[in-house]
Length: 386
Ligand code: GLA
Image 1 (cartoon, helix red, strand yellow):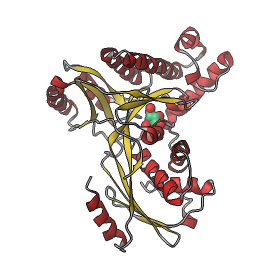
Image 2: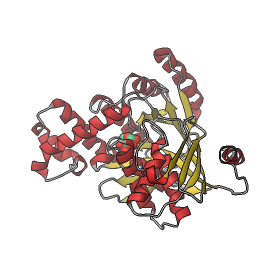
Image 3: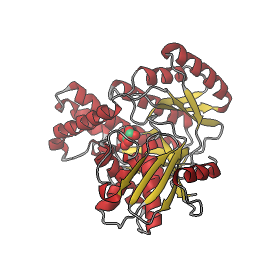
Image 4: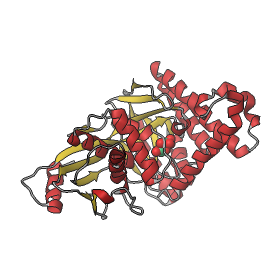
């Protein structure tokens, strides 16, 4: 990203070129395995990407918050005193929700000029929203000298999304954006928040993210529906196990008593979450043995479960994954993120990359009439000052 150009744009929008803005960056993320497990207290294995959101931000002497974006037309000037209300369907709710968290935690606030610009495709399941939230939280903490820990910024950003945007998301995205490390994935237990970096350097292979370019219609309401279905599954199992999250039940335990859940759909939802947790553990063990083939097989199984048990894939994601599976040299392919459109993540042997891009691209277009996009992922660091 050309920071000088961003700076020029900032001054066109906000004047006063003698007062330089500070520059911050937060990445997007791709989840390698462990999908729809985070809000169930399960395991995830995401990593931060080179794609992300830049924030140019400057303190003001008054109480005005000025929001502008290089990616969206909509701009807003909001007085701090009125900043506790979401704006209907606007990107501004992501940073505004973070301001609201600082306010709720009694951190003294002031006005700011803010210009956001990013290269994460919107609504593609690569956490453009968590990236905006985290870059805001990180910058505010720094500029206000609030002295917060990264984990607080992660939790507040998640809460901003839950309370202000209205998506009952788990903690994975904000966590990966905050805690990402170059060449490492993050193995996170979403119940205890214990985590550790896991080396993820693919010698001889590439990590390729493929965008279906299918707009995620109804994604938020379907997402909240899955969250509710998992809560219902827990009510059937809690007597037996004394648990409050599906992630607290092992696959062996579940396998024996799954018929306690009377409703087949709810049983399938629980089966996905609990088996996916086991796949994450197996994936960690595969990585520790450099067994990339096993890791890929687990990614494939994850997709099948998200398709058949959790039902969050849809024709576009399924087609993109099926076409990837056909290519000799594709080690693993699955949907990533919330689903219902968005992206897939693929591990591809280096000598098969060109074939992958050409053949998967053409076959996907032939079947869906959508042109996919491909990104060569680089596993990068978390939110930082530029
Ligand atoms: C979205 C949410 C995450 C997580 C994934 C699915 O990205 O923001 O919290 O639930 O979907 O794994």
